[in-house]
Length: 418
Image (tube, rainbow, N blue to C red; front, side, top):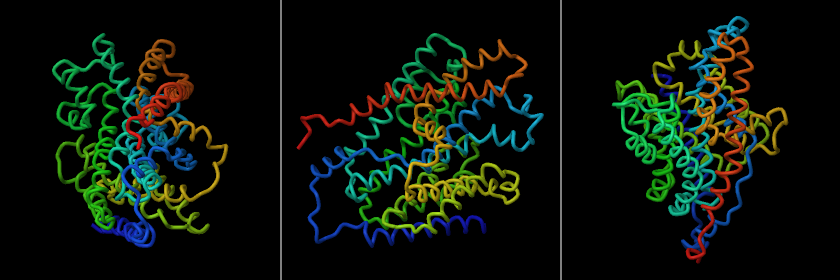
């Protein structure tokens, strides 16, 4: 209970800073004429693309690597390979089983970036253009998702191993509908895990539900203190949704409310730093505190368990809080980052495409490994090669398909221009 109070207290502190920022600079100035709806839409359309934030790209890179390695480890367990002979047991476990934590980091980053982008485009969350917001999100998400569903449907109809939905579990049509209507997670909670490429869409269902309701919440609440209060409610609900409100273990981890606190903490962090100028000491403090919490939750799991954080459902909340703090520090940090982290930034920039397609690489590579190296003597090379190939495939899709489609769909038709 003390841990719950501490977590809520931390979120309340962020909210207090956020409310102060709103009153000091985020609220509309009654002495200045507000832009018309057409002008707001024009601002949204013509706003330049946000510059990359080096530290956040690194976070995303680490997260997608955690997911990819987790999914390889499910098929080629590190503990059964020669790697386990040279590394401590805990290190082997940390390397192979942090995929879920990687997704939670993604959620917090998404909440932060979406809120920050809304501020940049519309200046005030209450003035957010629903039409503009949904157009931008559709342009980013839909092309790759629809293409992936087309490929998965073809593989299912051809009865390709690893990609075929089990007879009696659900129909192909039902799976497609779930993927397109943000409830793959609910379907899996009811019917069991779908083939891996389908299963990966559970997190996208959570993200899409956030994209659907967050802008509505911003527009409906109008008063930002109310918005912050609602976000705080989601932060408080998260641990209870994970440990008390369901006996379905899948839904406890992957349900909407179970993941909402991570997204909400990212939003609150973006609100808090909206008009806050961090000094060098404050920035350094956040740069240390945020990553320290992330490292503790992901790499010191025996200690996390000893503190009862898993039992209380607070490990996810603290991981998301650490990520939100890190995002706040990184967005206030100038520079492009060290070249040492450039590979991680590259993975981070292409994380969406890698996430959707990485199982398309892992399964063929697994087929090759079982035939060339059944004893897994060169497992380190196979892991490294598979991870690198997922990045190459994701980057190629981003460059030649999703980014061009994104730009094309975001372009405002001339008939809609004011």
